[in-house]
Image (spheres, rainbow, N blue to C red):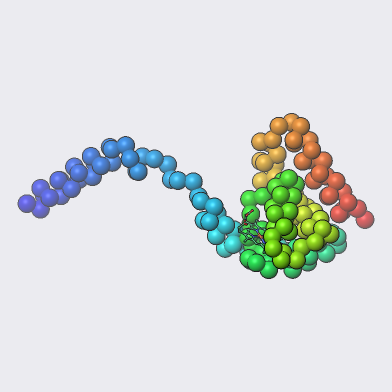
Amino acid sequence: MTTRTCCGTALLLSMLAALPGRAATPAPAEDADARIARWDKGPATIDVTNYPAVARESYNVFAARCARCHPASRAINADYVLPEQWSSCVGRMADKWFSGINKAASRNIREFLVYDSSVRKKPQVDAALAKLSAEARKTAEAAIAEIRLRFEKP
Ligand code: HEC
């Protein structure tokens, strides 16, 4: 009796596994809320000790302005790495009701995030650049190089 139940269960399971259904389909893509929750859970500060002075100052603006409505970790661990991505993200946040982020702060924060990505997320930046068209890549590389040069000049 026990054996029969066992084999019956095993047979049923193997039949289920063979069915084209949930088990065979790849996991659904992470939804937007889960993605944001994952970013929120990461580190909430960046060690900027070795960053140039301009970057350290802009980091303070970022830390003050971008942690008002959600933890700063949301931006620190975001998948955004390219200048365009940071422009649209910071622009969208600054446009929010009572964001308290003016034009000057927007510019500082965007430049800090581009600089920080080029240092802390270099492999992701390279991977993202590789996916762009030759022309878009040139524009993005020039924008990153311009900020790095300006931040790092003695
Ligand atoms: C006025 C409140 C507010 C401020 C200030 C704010 N955010 Fe947000 N942020 C939100 C809200 C609300 C969401 C979630 C929904 C959305 O994207 O609009 C969000 C989502 C995000 C996300 C998740 C992905 C995305 O693009 O939606 C990132 C990254 C982010 N913010 C970065 C920043 C950065 C960087 C700053 C500082 C420049 C900032 N936030 C300042 C309200 C704010």
